Length: 129
Figure (cartoon, rainbow, N blue to C red):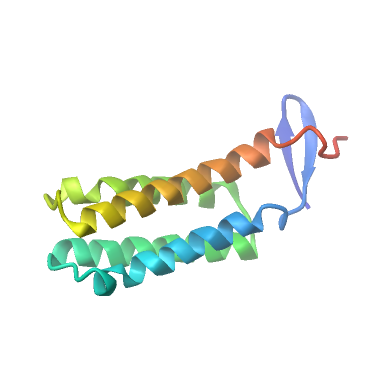
């Protein structure tokens, strides 16, 4: 069990309690990884960035399924935000790649932040010591 301090109390958390959120992030990463083929991304730079970002999210999500640590969720949140803004950074606005990266990036960041919130400020029905 993982224990996190919340406002002076020790909250006991089952590491598998929010594992479904990691699975969702892993599925989104796999979808993002195959999206250059599904949506025929023509820009090589954005295609490579999408593959690398998706692979990093998948590794972090899988790692969090094995051994959860807060920093893995923070990295996924940062990666999700990077995925969302990378079309503008690389100058590929108004393309299918932009829409895919924006949607998937926001979802990944949202799921990572949701998991962090649930861990630290979850329901009051959790066991406290």
